[in-house]
Image (cartoon, rainbow, N blue to C red; front, side, top):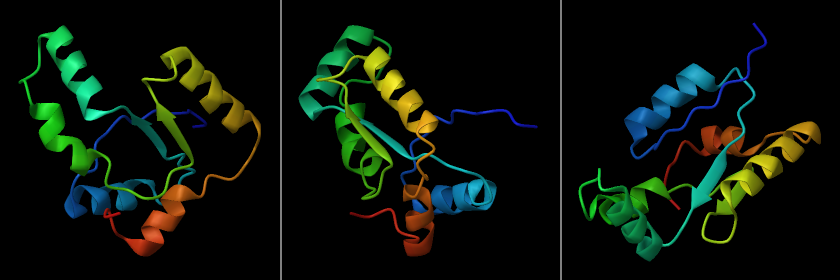
Length: 111
């Protein structure tokens, strides 16, 4: 239908990764890492007040377990609007999205 879709998900195990492969392998997928330090995650967790304290830190290694991304952002350095602009610039560049294809070939979530 020509609709662009943003999927915000944590792929922390092989079962979910395999499901993503099944659902998305025939589509153009831009794989983006949005990251900050464990310390910053803890600070944000406290500020939000709607998260179990320590959850972000406990999930950190699973969340950042991939070794291929089309784009990578550190949100301690960049504002969300800057990240969005970089994504738009990448889309407009017509550069091929390759990270998801490489991950599919390797079928591994581990660094």
